[in-house]
Length: 626
Image (cartoon, rainbow, N blue to C red; front, side, top):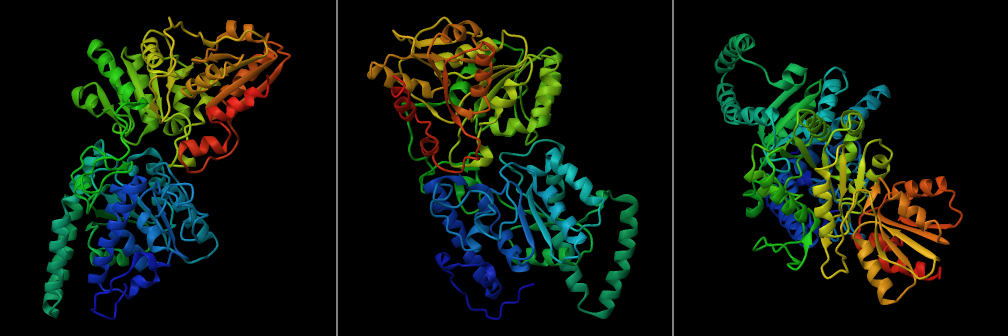
């Protein structure tokens, strides 16, 4: 444990921090002051740039204590998901200026940023498996270092974390697991494990009493002897009558529950964990959002991930009252449908707030299910409901749906079950970077039998597709982006038909036909009309099944342009090229889609521009064909 030599309070300027070595020179009052300053810095920077606020405010003291007790140039520190690593970044000399922006630090741990980051993530529950990998490698090579994984009460209930716990407990490769229990995860945790953590957290008062009692008894030899004697009796009775914790039963050394905002108490517990020869679960209780009253009082997860906001009022900046997000559009559409049909249920894997479903879940508590961070379970739960006669609607981010690809094939598409999927955040997502891009689902959905895959470009199309999904038999996927619905677009009134595309512009010649997907085609259409360009523009509302009849008619054109900025080139672009090849199309094919790269953090407009996928960029390339 660090032993500061002075009682003088040292005021650290965060801008001067180059590394964590200075922490061991600070006394606890100085560390408390530093904790306050770090919290102010996190609040300030997330208010400017957005990011994960509440989780980072909750782990300030834990991170400080870990850096005082370990040397992470040598030891390994893995934050589950990585989104709660802002204090870690500050202590290792990284500025939060331009956080998550093109020229700033990542919102997650990033190996290329610092040698203090030994692993990367963005999705939950990977930390324990990775930690075991480090521990196995360490012991096989005869090396000496500690492996520490910090995981939250929301992430640890995921199946991947359980698989890792099971393996770690049966191997003699020590891992120190810090279980950060804030009773929230993103919003309040779901299920029996959440109740278990709540139960053992209440034991913290008893733990504090035991510590004080032991300290008092050890003041004399007689007291020490009496303490040891009574402890042996107590432990003998306990083994017979008192159930152990889940982690004890698995074979871990369980330590807790510790106040996660008391650095001194944390360091004592960490010291004990370091001395223990086997793997340890150190259970700490924290307040999610600590230090910012709006975040502390949040029970819905609103302050988990934030856009820029006003610090004093807590109100978001950059409001667009004249526009509506796609997420909230579908929430409004669902509200009407849930009132009309009693056979509908909604399932969400811990993204209720992000998808704007809070009011629906509050209004229909018996027909809505937040299963927590458990994507695979969410989809197989939906399959059971569908077979039983209910129509499930699964609201899920594209990036998280890919974690349940096997369930889509094995449990849903194979049985051709009628389930509606609202695939939120399809396409580029901007500042969350490569781990959260929703650009991969098209490729695996289009290659899976029985699937219907769609993408609306307007609110009218969204309403049609949602209603259509309830009429069709089989899995029906509606993709939509992390974007705002633009008003005053040139939207035609259409009598939509299943599997049919929409002719938006018709050229006089047969030179260029553009097949486009999603909302960006609206901006492209405006440019084409304004320039009076002799181009046919087709709205591919249905990606699968494609409109075979219209595609056949387009085969008469000299050039076919495929524009899909919402997926990689191995999605709809590749699918359509295959169909054109099957038709023996002899003309030129030009495509605009996301290339075979991981798209890093930046604003969505910046990402599109860098990839040459803005409507104005595509428009300029189309002009060159005429």
